[in-house]
Length: 305
Image (cartoon, rainbow, N blue to C red; front, side, top):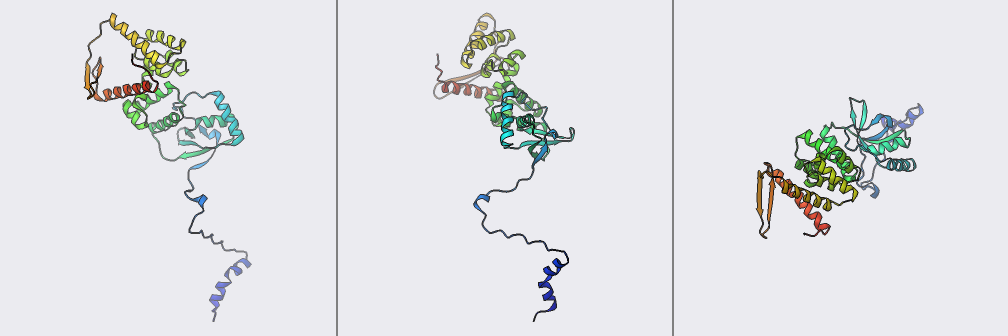
């Protein structure tokens, strides 16, 4: 026999609705098996849209130049198709704005396209200057967007920020140590030659060979020759070697302070020498650089002569 309490409970929703109150609808129960399209998907926090004037570029970004033609093409694409990937930003209390970690090119193109807002991923954790620079370097190196001297300066900044060697920078960024050492060598060139390298007038590898000359006037002479004749890395290396050989015949060379010989089982001897004292880390880096050069010559079928 039904009780009064049970009867009231069974008609509670109708009673409440009659006085203007409706119970919340129960959530729909999900089946035990997800749909195929939902497998592996999950909502990600930290994404959103910002007014474009609330975002500013990072003054320390290693990439300083953006080709106007490429920006114009990207702006046209953003107008037609919208923004396909968010940029990454971090908050700056000092500026009171969001600072770009990665995606400045998209932000510039969005401004050029006249878009009022831009999609962002908000990096919530605090980042040190070194971590920000690492992220920016990795993004640009993966896309090969950095100019040679921009890349070199970014490596040098990481070394200064962290007290790292070139080898440690290479290990952290997962790039060959020879790539770092060749890039850093460009910073030993005069400003005018560095600019010619960045402009593409002289190949970066040719610029690296020019850095082996100690006299700036000699560097400029061979730079003019490399640019005029569009010399390859190997041709420039040969000219530098010949020039250094001539100087040795006319000038007394100071004795090496470091000279090590590494014999192999096949009868070869690898000799490492320098006119100053060195460390095994420096020797390892020199050997890695030499090995990279040997492999480059093998790939390009350069004959021994």
